[in-house]
Image (cartoon, rainbow, N blue to C red; front, side, top):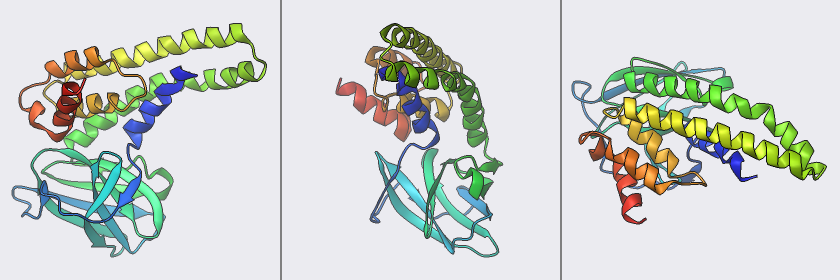
Length: 239
């Protein structure tokens, strides 16, 4: 049923990319001192790879741009980014992926094997802000939990009336989530998080181009310079 596309959006929020490709040169992250760049101090819990990789995310692909050896379950990355963006950490001999935002500050990331998709991040205001958004979004998506078994049962029984009823309920959840996201962007139009959330909307199976343009227009001029906002602008130019 098409209204279960909400699950797809939430997967984008939590785990937006999956493909790993060969290394290439990427200009928008470089080595720098911690005076004007970032320093990530990482800790691994309950799993023991020998090396971790920092990956730039482009479309649905990961590009390895740096690596670090693990010493006493700790690792670090130092560099500089032009704008805050989401990056991915991958692990040698493990298929798991941790997504997070890199901004030019010193912060810690604690990655537990049981909650790899939800690392603990200390000292990064943008990661904290994204976490708050995800917590609120989860309260909406929890409403899907009780509908999915009903949907499966109705589909097996070919209960057309019940499927229509569930479809209407899903539309309400869909609208609630869309309104929540758009209101969040409106209230945070000067935050890079707003551009990231809006970029995720253009990856969904159902896209309201007019609403995306309307929401994009309210972003501050500084946020529109970010890579996420530029991707949105390119999308709008094509539609």
